Image (cartoon, rainbow, N blue to C red; front, top):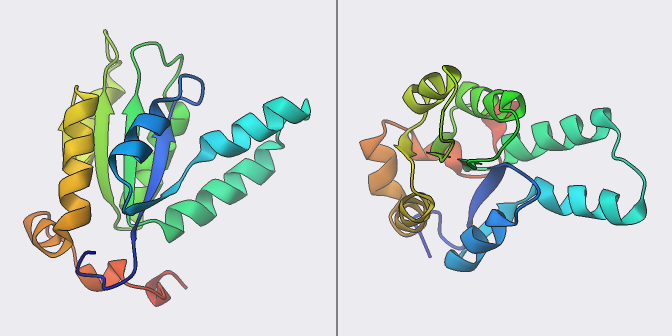
Length: 161
C-alpha cells in the first residue's frame, strides 16, 4: 500500500507492442494497476480486425488521463518512435510522472528530448522496473523529489475536467 491509501498506483505502459516486455514489468510490480495497450493490440490481431486508429487514440488519451505514471520502454528494435514521443509529451502536459527506458542502439536525435522530458531515464529495463517498484512503495517522497503535487495523483482527477 502507498500514500494513496487503498488506491493502487496506475501505470500506463508505452512502447513496442510485439515482444512482450510488458509482462516482465507487470510481474515485477504486483501492487500496481497497469493500463496496457498491448492487450488491445493482441485482441485485434487475434480477431483479424485491425483496430481503428480513432479508437486506440481515444483509448490512449483516456488511459493517459487516468494513469499516475507513464512507463515508456523503447526496445532496441522498435521501428519508430513517433507514438512513444506523443504519449510521453501528452503525459508530461498532464503533469504525469514519466519513466523512460531507451535501449535503441542508435537513438534518434529525439531520444535526448524524451530523456530530458522524463523524470527518470535509463538504458536498462531492470533499472526502470526498480524505479517503478520504488515509486509504488514510496509515492510521497518520489513526488517531493520530482516536484509533483501528490494531490494530482489522487482521484477523482477533477483537475482534468
